[in-house]
Image (cartoon, rainbow, N blue to C red; front, side, top):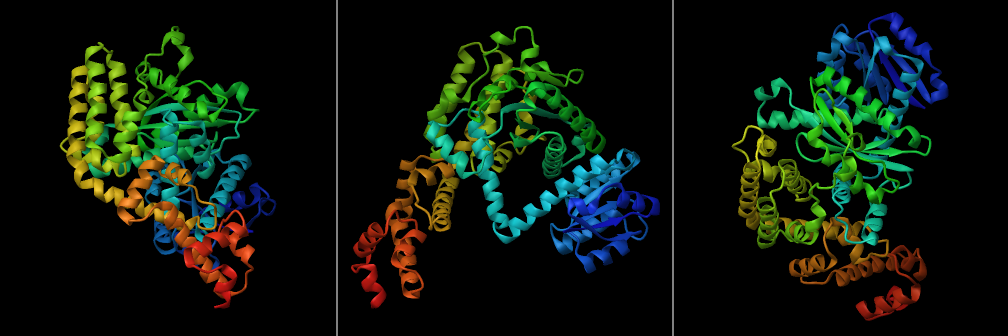
Amino acid sequence: MIKLLIADDEPLVQIGIKSMISWEALGIEICGTASNGDAAYELICEYRPEIVLTDIQMPCSSGLELGKRCREEFGELPVFIILTNYEDFNYAREAISFQAFDYLIKIDLSPESLTEAMKRAMAHVRKLRSAASGISSGSAAEFQLLQERFFIRLLNNLFETDAQYTCLAEELKIPMNFAGYSVAHIALLPPAMEQQLSQEQTLKFYGSTRQMLQELTTKYLPCREIALDIRHMALIFYFTEEQLPDWKERVTKTLTHASEMLFNYYSVRFCACVGRCVGNLHELSTSYYDAKQIVNEVSKSRPILYWDELPDFSSMRNVFQLSLFRSEIGKAFEQLDEEALRNVFSSITELLSTEHVPYPQALDAAGSILHFTVTLLPEGAEIASRIFSEEADSYCSLYRQKTVPAILGWLRRLEDGLCDFLPDYKNRHKNYLVENTKKYILEHLHERIVLQDIADNFGVSPNYLSQLFKRFEQIGISEYITNLKIHKARELLKDGNLKIYEVADRLGFESAFYFSKVFKKTTGVAPKDFRNL
């Protein structure tokens, strides 16, 4: 059973929540109730509940103060769900500082909404427990980053082969069994108070806004948020068979509710362009291109727009496609090659300046390069921020450029900044890639490790990774893997608890015969003889 603590200074609210649903059937035990923040803290210390449902305004210490104190002392558990009144929205915003999990409005509270909130919180608790017992926070963050890079490549149709896509999707546990998928391109509209924020505060503000938008949308539909830059993001929606017939109505409802709540908390509105629904995740770039084509058609008066709602939608296929420059971009970003980077920028700027490209398409081209820089280049956001550090809105100054020549000037500035930065950064990144390859090998030592899988995991070509690894380690990847496996095999053989075929199986060798052959070649003796030494 998962333990729940209820904290509210109104006894009737406490009674109402306790009697609203069958807690035992849900798998939750109410371990206590408290009428003020200090009493709630003492009960948390005594019973260590996994979930706390707390009002914001209480005597002694508020729900916000309670949440911040618990986050500092206990970490991510307990999970906090905040109870608010409409007039408390300004206070509720502060809950972001300690990453409150959910927000419930008292007047709208129902058995259904309370049950759903608790189910989400329970799932989050289990996820945190699993992470604590297995994957470290650093590994989890790295895994998350790899997933985001996968989706950026997918949205921009940058996978070279179907096999590469399938292998990486399975490795990163990407959901591929839904009946349909669609992409919404989201543009957050800056609030009036943004001008009062520093660059660091702006980054934190929009980061919290995107996080909350993700949490709000997942209440209604399964989806994944991918940050494109500070103010722009892609929302990838997943649909079951039952949801497909009315998927547009479901997406509209989801985005409308999320927009209302986001404005109440942050005074931020957004525009959403939604692409077609595709039946295969691999086709997601089609939906993404659909959405990007109508970016300039949405407005505050029409904030949600579907690609096929425009009269001439069938002829609108002039959006800039990054996949046309796949090989050039791949080389430039994979190898941090200044010359390749110059070439791809020159190709794009020449195309934009000589073909009389319309302003929307030029902006899309520059936006694609910016998104690629920020998301696929390690530390890309920090690098781009330094290049445009003199601008109040950093690299988002792109979206203030109102003519094609102005966009081209912005692109040249990005190009020069990247090429100036790359020489110093290149060696550090290459070493980072090699070190993470070694870490990957160590974590998968019990499996059959294939070079292609490692390269796909880091989004580079096998040939490049192999050459880079040998340059830094003075040994090939295959030989490095074999040496590690044989070193581990020596330990297991000396331990004496496993048979030779069990050692071979534990280290991912295809057979005991092959293991014995490799072992003898490496050590000079057979496994059986080594054990008897």
